[in-house]
Amino acid sequence: MHNRPVLLIHGMGSSYEHNWVTPGWADLLRESGREVVGVELPGHGVGGRTGDPTRPAPEVLLEAAAGIAPVDAVGFSAGGFALMVAAARKPEAFGSVALLGVTDGGLPGNRGGDPGTRAVADALESDEEPVDGIPRLMRRLVDTAGNDRGAVAAFARSRQPRAGTGDLAEITARCLVVEGGADRGGPAELIAAAIPHCSRVVLKGVDHFSLPSDIGCLDVVLRFLDGE
Image 1 (tube, rainbow, N blue to C red):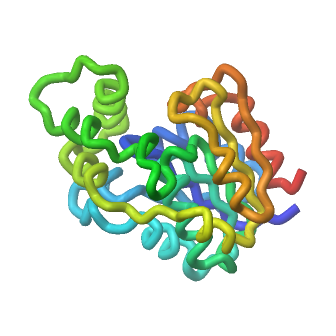
Image 2 (spheres, rainbow, N blue to C red):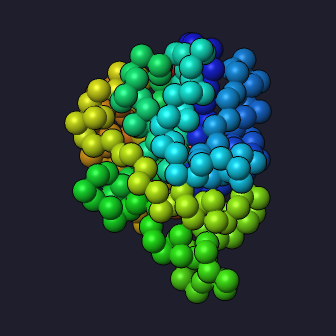
């Protein structure tokens, strides 16, 4: 068992507080003796109103890890994709990584599951609430998390770097991929297969947005971080 610091990286539209504190992740990790470092994606959180929302998210992660590496890290959705890039660029900085809600559709060249879609950005910039399900849900998530709609929209439209399967082969950290069986974005089979030391867990009946608050997800990730 290692008590490395843990980086927690939220999904697009959310925040460290909304994604990790409210469901209990941060408290449980601290109770186990871990230092918890919450990482806000560009355009999100308090700093999202003043910082550059188009800044590459992997750079933010690597800055957060600087001086305390090696670290463990948990990333959800857009945070998971950013974590994949960071762990591939600087493998020695990460001991264990858990990737939640990342799907093969978000890999370069296959943009079907990309969370930074035009529809979501349009919904955030619109004066009226959208009718469609996902854009409407994302707009409400942004508001609930206390984010600035315009800043998150700019992040969604930015060309954030993505790791391809060749890049993922450079990751040396222990890896766990957790996906919801009801995630409409599809599976993460290619991602899990491309990372050398990676296992994959599918939680039946769990959709994409409920994954971070699912007790089964929390349990399997905490056990993974403890080396089980």
